[in-house]
Image (cartoon, rainbow, N blue to C red; front, side, top):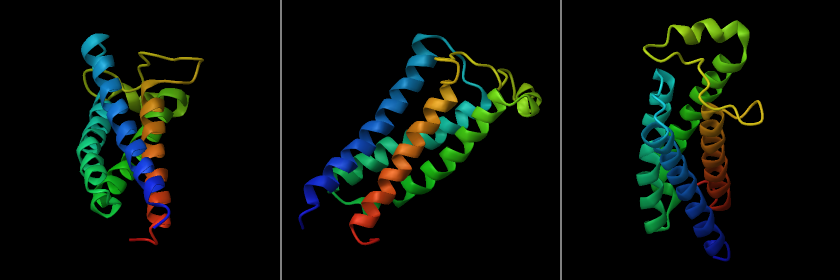
Length: 142
């Protein structure tokens, strides 16, 4: 199988992306002191298991064991996109005010005027989801 090394590399990239996202979220909460809002917690719940799921898949060199990761990253994409829209669209900003102790429309960071924490999480979920789909296609849908 000629794609074997390429598949292993993509699997490691997926795992690395999930690990970076986990470490990034812990950096913002534990080092920077940013208290996660309710939607941030949902994204963490969806992201953190991906490190284990894709770690096992990388060790076994088998993407088929990581199907739960595809599902979690797909749901995570949706949550992140919704959270970003709550932050950026005035029509949804009110929904973010009723989000618990920390308002979900709060922006702890806003790099370049558009990169917020949910934006970064969304990119991570999208990268994981898309790379997983590419790996499945390369392996013939296994």
